[in-house]
Structures are given as C-alpha cells and as structure tokens.
Length: 307
Image (tube, rainbow, N blue to C red; front, side, top):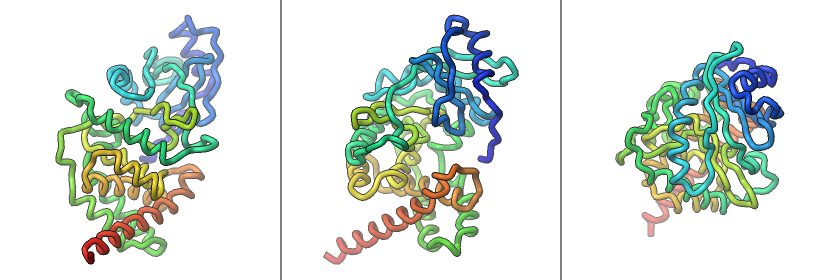
C-alpha cells in the first residue's frame, strides 16, 4: 500500500481543462484545501471539481465511478458525487480523470461541530439504503478496491506482522483474539454494495446533518464489514450503539468491521504504511478504543450469563 503519487499541479490541470474542455477554459482552478492521498482534487470555477488519480493503483477507479455513481445516486437518500465529464490522458499525465459537480458541506473531519448521535443515525440509514440497491453486475473486490468487500485474510500476514512489531506497546493477546475471532467468519448473504472508505473525511455535514457521502474510489460489492470501521474510528459509546442498532447486520459482520478498523490502526502504528500526523496520533487511540470496547462486550456477555 506504499504508493508514490506523482506531482499534479494547478498548471497541469489548467492545460488538461483548456485542451480537452474548452467550454470551461475561462474558469478558475485552485487546489481543494484537503485533497487526500489517493487523488488530487481542484476547484473548477465555483460549482465543479477536478479529480485526478495520484498513482497507477487508483487509476482503475475512475471509469468505475463514471459508470456506477450515476446509477447509484438515483436510489440513495443523500448526495453522492455524480461525474459530469471524463478526461483523457494528456500533457504528460498518464491516466483518465473526472470532473464532478461541487457538493457543498464541511468534512466531518474538520466541521466545527458534529452531533455524533445524529451522524450515526444518518450514516446508518444511508448504508441501509446502499445495501438495498440491486448489486447484480457490480464490481467484485480486487486491487481496485484494495480488497474492501472481500476477505480479511488478504491482510492476515500484514496484521500479524504489525502485532509482532507492536507486542511491547499493545495488549497483543487481546488484539490477536479480536483479529482471529473476526477471521473465522465470513459474509453469508448475497453481495451488497460497499463504499469501501467510510471515514470522517468522506462525510459532508451541512446544518448539523449528514448531507453527502463522497469518494467512492473503492466502490465494490461483497461483504459490508469494512464500512463499519467508523464505529470505532469516529463514534463512541452512545453514537456507536445508535449506529449498530440502526444498521441491520449480524454480530459476525460487526466483529469483522472491528477487525477492519484494527488492521488499519495497527499497520499505521507499526509504520508499515505512510500516514499523516493526524492518522499517526489517532491510530493509538483507535487501538485502545477497540480493545476497551471488546472487553466491555465480554463483560456484558458474562453479566448476562450470570443473571
């Protein structure tokens, strides 16, 4: 997962727009403040954005989004990106790229205030709607989704390596138990639509409500467990309970969701992937939260058995 992005400048985007979409030649271009790692994003005028993959590993996602997002958007209760145009390689840039309409809202990662309980309800309802959409013919898990929607076992060796590297800094016995409990299960239902990267940075807030879900680059069909990781990376206690109660999923799927969150936090903490400063700090908090939540669940189960 250590992919080196290429340099994508405002000048490059200007050349691509001017040569391929002359109808937008006079519009201003400026980088989006929080552009992300997988893609580079630029404002195009006031109402559009340009989104370009930063390396080859993300290039296959462009045409997938172009094809599927318009079909999904009609069946979802919140806004999602809908492409307006498909750009071609050019000016030294080697991959296809997209132009989208700009969606107003603050990222949940940077919004001044977030009502987590309301966000948990809104997001769970969005995911319920996503899961109800017919998944026939959808893209199966693979490199384009970094195997989101697929089996946790893809990341088993990497996870165990991280646990070994961190064994003097974490409760490695409990962490291994959490991982192996999830690894022993699999999705038993028909494939459902999976966003693949439900994180605070991909949720837009407006008027204190979730208004849009963005960045569907890892869109796939299969096991929805990876989309549950936010229950431990953002939600806490009451908001996590609301999220879990509103989503109609079984215990094994929640266990795998916890494991997806654990895998990402472990590999960041162990330095197996590059991360920004915020991720580097939060990974330890997430590991602690996952362990504490798991132990609370064991304690609750023991208490119910005693009564």
